[in-house]
Image 1 (cartoon, rainbow, N blue to C red):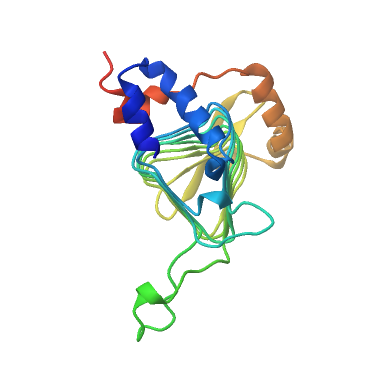
Image 2 (image 1 turned 30 degrees about the vertical axis):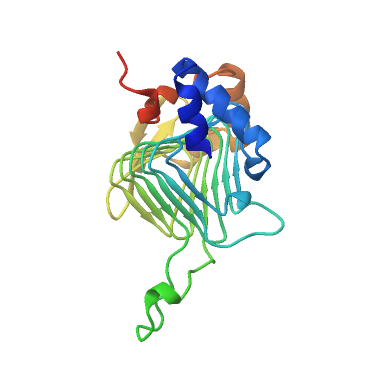
Amino acid sequence: MLKKFLINISEYVPKKMLPFLVSSYYFFNRKKRYIGNGTYIDPTVQLIRYTNISIGHHSAICEGSSINVQQIKKDDFAIKIGNNCYLGHRCFISSGESVILKDFVTTARDCKILGSSHVVSNPMLPYITTGTTHNCSIEIGVNCFLGTSVMVNGNVKIGHGSVIGANTFINNEDIPPFSMVVGNPSKIIKRYDLKIKQWINANNFNEDDENELPTEEEYLVSLNSKFPNIPMFYHATGKNYGDLP
């Protein structure tokens, strides 16, 4: 329905109006009532069990992405994506217990956030019939950036303000706030020193430096106050915007 809607109107409205029109479509379509104002989801994006998915305001999800709820939660959403988030092309999210992306999370292309897998305890059964795991929770904190082809797997909490380098694999481990992480297996190479306002070698980051960092709540208040109106890069989400001049 959304693709047909876009095709019907694309000849008559400027491309910059598409985010507003798609947001309006979701608002009036009750099946998609958990999509925030100003949020644009490319028509090629697949939302599986979409009534258990919540997406905040002024966010964008690029073409070819798949957001998959494996376990329905009756009293909450299984997947929550916050405000001012940008998910790059072909992002794949699969939730077990829950997946939470907080405000201002940005991912590059081909990122994978895997809180669920197939049950493989009995190889005498076709794995396509064995169901999926539901016990893992993933939380990505406020204003984290995931580079190209990052994979997050299992029970993981990534602290606010962190940067995850391209092709990094984070597997069942927590990352403290304001960390710079690279590699497979992942390694914290830098932390942000608030006093000198620079990333420094993680080995030189001490307890006093840790105590200087803002809490996630303080950090979010600061970002919202300093950047109340971030223009979302809708034009980069997919082919519906055509070739830019």
